[in-house]
Length: 200
Image (cartoon, rainbow, N blue to C red):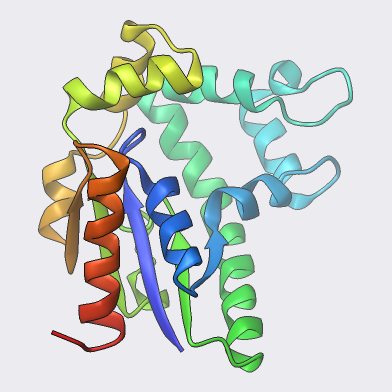
């Protein structure tokens, strides 16, 4: 099984690229979704989150309130580092198990979509790293439209992340996503043809 690690900054368009790859035949493992599952109420991940930030990040149902957790973690780089250190080993374990299941089922190509793939050192899980990139002047309006953030909140989220240049330097493939969806689709289809199917 060929495994592609798909990463990039917030608002760059990883989800759109992942959707396009899935439409071409790839299976998709979303690290964020696995992450949400590992801190459901009563789990080890839930206990770690509460130990770090207290019950202020819980909703009335005692589940972790992702909005509140994000507000706490993204306003303090130290808090984000502690959160990632607590949860990444648990997420890595579940992603690894999912990849094994897919390979045993005969899946040919799988995409691991993980915003912090490189920061967490998960390159060993994948055969190639694809980084989706867009300049901040494109990303900020996207975050305002799709996530309801103010320009200042969007900038804060971007600034809390690893520099795009660092990620691009460590990529096997860089996908620029600063234009329209049709341009992105053509780019992804061309990459699939050349890098997955081996056609010039």
